[in-house]
Length: 251
Image 1 (cartoon, helix red, strand yellow):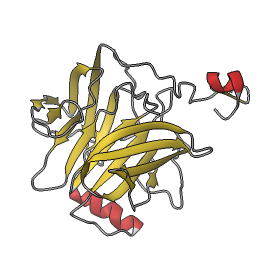
Image 2 (image 1 turned 135 degrees about the vertical axis):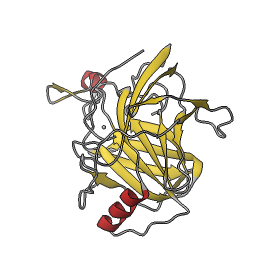
Image 3 (image 1 turned 60 degrees about the vertical axis):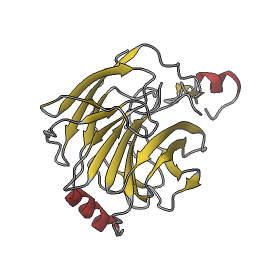
């Protein structure tokens, strides 16, 4: 299985009866037409991950590690080849592993595949953040960095595999809500003041999250709080975890 989309973003059934089943709202097809009807994963999935810095320039990272399946620990990582900032790899569609981009002298990055059946592009662009990026963002929104915690960057997508606007994001760690509220972002990763849901960029950041291999991200339509996606994610101290997340089979 291979879905190829050009991803410009850095890192994207209110009615009853038949209208709700078909995802039709006010005579138009809802971008959430697949909600609760996502097909189960099958076969293999090929990914193209483009790794860039905060200026959207491709970066050489050496050899990233792929950790199959989401369950800790990563006992048998495999090496991935990075060419001009791009990772091309194929895994079983049922694999919900992650890519580890360790950096012993700066903040590290994790890139999640997302849950099996996740409706999101398989060609994705991820910003690999540096400590200076974190400091700049923290200063811009007035938060204090905590070196004992990590952060999440979420790119929300709809059933058309397009960045989803009007989506609220919640994060729990071992079943408990995190204390930090999401920052909803523009396409250039700046915070939108007083925003309570994603913009057309579909992006959000949650800062100062306690490290855990049992964290969960939930996406809900802000208009009615209908859950459209949930996904387990890994959070580590001094690490930015990024995930592309669209409708899943878990709601």
